[in-house]
Length: 99
Length: 487
Image (cartoon, rainbow over all chains, first blue to last red; front, side, top):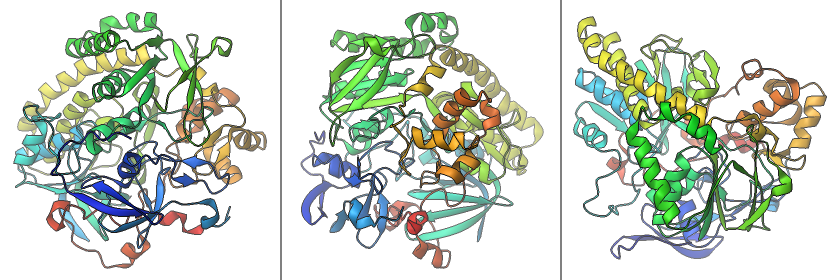
């Protein structure tokens, strides 16, 4: 989407989404960084495979879950991007059809 | 386990002012907050080092500065999650990969509220979000949620968000307010108890109108459509009970829909602490029962701010102060005379604010028609992906309260623990069974109410501190949803 940040000095951090390199600004959450990169649907639900993304923005709805290597499932809206972080979009197949 | 005199959960206006009031009375306060910086949702500060434009004061001043100035008596645990309350005011807190059990002599719960969104077709599509979520993106992430937005729901917060998105460069395709102008006008007398807010609301409205933003009063959003993302929103006029007339529906092309119908108090910690709740529709639903000093039914546990019943930022600030003073009095730092002297002006101000809150509810309070937006195919439980038809069959099979519906359908069993689905499904159940919301009951939370990594819990309890102390990113790792390991 559109970044409102015009400060050229703000530090950036590098991370990957499904192996693709992306850049985020320091202090950005995973959700913020994904939205800034134009990615809005980053999860497929387990049962119906429906697209989901950012909804409540404050950690109560758990709709924005992503996988982070070494951390497991996290809320994208509550987790800051760290340099070198490897983020993966949960896909239906990868989650296993448990339910 | 460590021991603290006063533990406050939440660093929004209520939590901050509780800490300040207690600190001024000589009590050491420990404040636990999810965010990296204090302020709560309403005074949310940017996460990163980027400062807001020079010359404009931070929203939340002077409260924020006062809170920071009191650092000698206020211990702030930021980026920390209070995920449980156990008997005798033991609060379980995790921060980063550490956790701790804090035995609190006094406990003030000020966790705030979240937005109420009843299910409607398409509400799970990416691009549909709460107004607060869009605001958070602009405030703390400094990005826009999309290019063209419709802001819908009810209440003055819609104006604030529409204006903020417009000023940040988004095209606001319209504001959709369920309340009818006549109903709002009927509450004008009560609303005038806060002329400052009325003026502010009017200015926002005028500014948006002048910018050509259309307003649709007495309308609700009935559906959102798109393939993988939102493309179109359909709105329709509604009657006084907010029942939409779909024959007069019209469609708007947008990539973002902000939708929220007021706020729901976060009562999970109060429930875990054993506090009795009661249902007060005008204050957002289930709220902890309190005495005039905001002490709950559990001795030594106070509830302040929107988490104790929705009333807005200024009421939250007053309530926080009252709870902080009451806790300081209970802990022996204020004698009866000093307590009364400091508390009485706060009580008077709260009485004034109550009039305004009542008028707001009269103007914008949720009407029963909203419970009928979902069709049988609509997802009503976002976590468990249950449709209204799934829940309906649970109801036909005898599930008339959350406990039985949960067992029969998995409603409310996902990681949000019913936060998102239950307030709306309780209202839907009311239309189906005729039972009162009080009889239907609240969702019952289980600890942990916030994700805690099993690896974290396996460790010995560790020291906690301000997130900044161990680097800006500490405290935001380890957000594991361990409750999901079974699925």
